[in-house]
Length: 128
Image 1 (cartoon, one colour):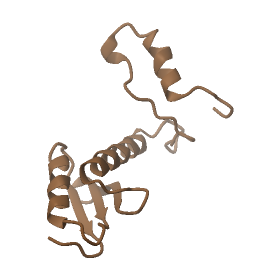
Image 2: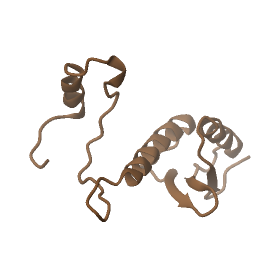
Image 3: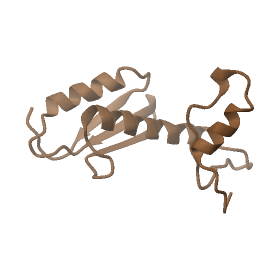
């Protein structure tokens, strides 16, 4: 809502005081500028799931690889694939002296924890 001043932590604190079941209290709240809607005006849950999946994968992959999404070293997107369903696309532009084998192992280690198929595209040249 325009002009709102509540932060995500304010919202979590507010909900924590009103939700009796501890497991039901949100761990994280994301504030979006505009809620994606379907053609009939309902919240588009598919688009919301895709957005949170991308945010999650960007965060865990950046942590695992030490690469930055902001600097263009790592680009992660979640898209529908004709044969594989939902697929994670990971584009890696490692620094010149990066160990591509180690980066690939870190990515595989992270992505192995999820049920999403993924594809890695390498940009530039790194050592293997």
